[in-house]
Image (cartoon, rainbow, N blue to C red; front, side, top):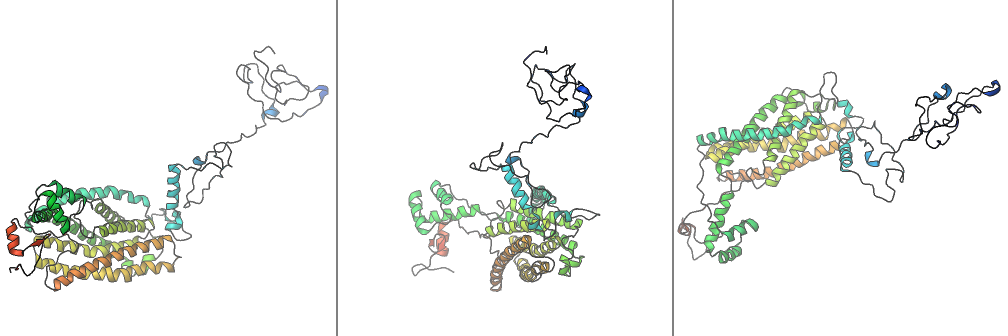
Length: 501
């Protein structure tokens, strides 16, 4: 043919048999010769010619002829699509059943591990799988309902999970506002109420005692005191005094307690007033069956939106600052309470339990501000005012947390929904978290009753959860003269020592 390079392998002909074109031999099937003897031949349809390698020319080069029109209209065979790797297959959320997974190729195909090799999912795929199952509709909504039913339409707005993203920045904003409030409002108020700090004597530096205090215990037994006395070169009485003073150093100051109580009092009071304004004009405030009327197709009001956002942000801020706040005896119970409250508020928002959620939040805020105000007056030394407020708080707490909540609100969330739809996971989960909160309420009611007993017997009312400060006199002789011999900071009375009145 006169062209450079070896001739290309001849693909199947597509021209009539016996015809030869100008490029016959180098361009098989590209000839346009007429059939002999006037016979009309229908061209056979074969696979299109493969492209030539470099240096062998092309049909698109100058002088090359195209396929006949009859052959040009024939579409080439579809190219076989290689299967995608397993990790690249799109994952389908159970909450969105419209999409389906591509069928996994059989083991041994390209990009697919053999049956003997373990299937390893990437972290992203695992996260997508967990995310899909977390938002599965059957977990959050009753049967025959989908997330599409809660999409905004016709001017009706519904709660969305993405709405709660703003609560984390708002929680940090609450921490900033709290710092400003405690500095410029609570501290001057403490001065007006004559909140005085007690003078605390610091423990003298002692490496042996400090190591035992930090690593072993803050309350050594009498045998430990005697052992530390020999190691440190101090007397038993000096070791006991050192531990008393060292424990007092770690206790929060009276001013810190007052500032914290005043901040919580302010928020709980404002939140209770705002919560009552949100629900007092709603029909479900007077008839609890209205809570589930039309559920879950219940549109959200702007007042409900802001009430939820502010309450959830505040409890996030309490959880963030719990490590630096005043630690009480119920520290673990406080953490459980904050976490359970955050989960309940968030879940009620996801599942559109907003009407029930607003009732529960307002009910909780109805007594909290009374407790914080009683603490404030206690720190200020106003004993009678503190005791009177405590009586009101105890009555409100018992009525709201031990009567109204279990017999009205929880009855509403446990019994009434079953009249509308079968129980589902969200139904059980919500009421389980309500039971956790109710258990904490019973525990705190026990502490309140103990405090009420002390009040009835004439003792000063103090918060049973508080860590009381230990008294410490600067002179050992005054302690002995007043209380007699001490055993780890406590007086020991026997026949050889007389207690002075």
